Figure 1: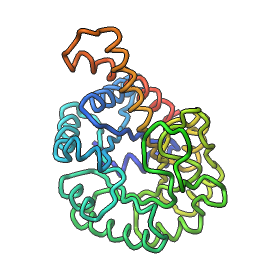
Figure 2: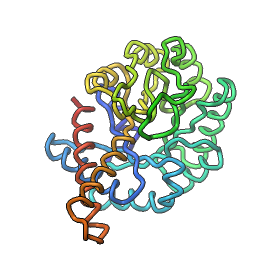
Figure 3: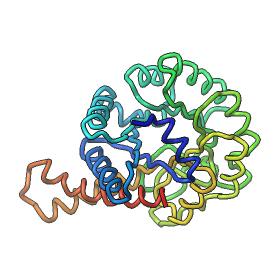
Figure 4: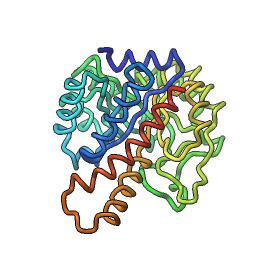
Length: 293
C-alpha cells in the first residue's frame, strides 16, 4: 500500500484532493470508512481517507483507541485509512501523537505571532521527525477560528479580508524556515458553518499564489459550507487536502434527531446511531467524489 506522503504527492500531481474528516465516536469512523470503500468501488481505484481527531476529540475517544481503531481497520480492509492529530497546540501533544503512531500531525500556531509561530512549528517538525522520520507535519499561518460549530456570526479575529489573508511571501518564508510537509493558509476559509448559510468566499487567486510560493501541498481547513465550485477551484489551484468537520457533526445530530422521532421507544444505541452513520456516509461520499472530480 502507498504511504500517506505518496498519496498526497499523487493528489498534488493529479490536481485532486484527499478528504479529511473528523470523528468523535465509532459511528463517525464507521461511516467515513464505509463511504471511502464504497466510493472506491464506484470509481475503480482506492480512495484514501484521512481521519482527524482534534485535541478535544482525542481526549474524548482516547488517542490510543483512535490509533488502534484506524490501524486495525486499515489492515483488515486493506484500505488506505490514515490518522491525523488535528489542531495540536503544544509540543507535548505533538510528542504524544508521534509516539502513539499517528500518521500526521498539524501544529497550530495560528494565534501566535509570526516569528513565534515559525519557531514553535519548526520545533514541532524536529520533534515529530525525530520520533518518526516518515510522519507528515503540517503548519498553519493565519487565524480562521477554532470551533467546528454552527455560527451566528464570524468568530472574533478571523482573517477573511483580502488584506488580512496569508501572503505568498509569508507562506514561502514559513515553509522554508519550518520544514513543514503541508501548509494551511488563511484564504477566506473559516472553521464552522454560518447558520445563515452565507459563508465567506474562498480567494482562489490567493490560493494559487500561495501554492506557487510555498511549493508544498496546501491544506484547506474549514471546508464545511463552502460551495462545490469553490472546492473544485481550490483543488485545481493547489489544495491537496480538504478538511470537513462541522458538516459531519451536523449529519450526526440530524441522524439522531430522526432516530428519536421515528423510534421513540428504542434504547439500543447502535440502532439509533445507524441513522447518524447513514447521514455521515452520504456527506462523505459526496465530498470524496467531488474532491476527485
